[in-house]
Length: 130
Image (cartoon, rainbow, N blue to C red; front, side, top):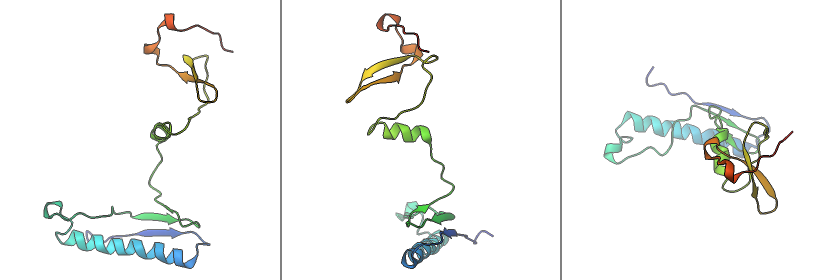
């Protein structure tokens, strides 16, 4: 059925009633508005109208009021790249297989991985790690 739109909500037990009501009513209002916009030409970008929300068919509401969309999977590599501008990202590693360099940090010296193609043997001192 092309006209059938479903919305699945999963509020956690222990959610306070006002928050539960708000998190249950808002998605259904969005669903109704998106249905009306898609049935008319209001959602057509050529007419200047744009939908404000993306259709989210599934949502979980946690006790603290946080809404989680279960289909979203975190991207660890992108998250680390984003957070690296604000804080130090640490990862366990085996320095016996990876070329590293010692870099002075704000509070202490750190080891950073170096690209193999950027390694110039005259710039580095070899150290045996065990």
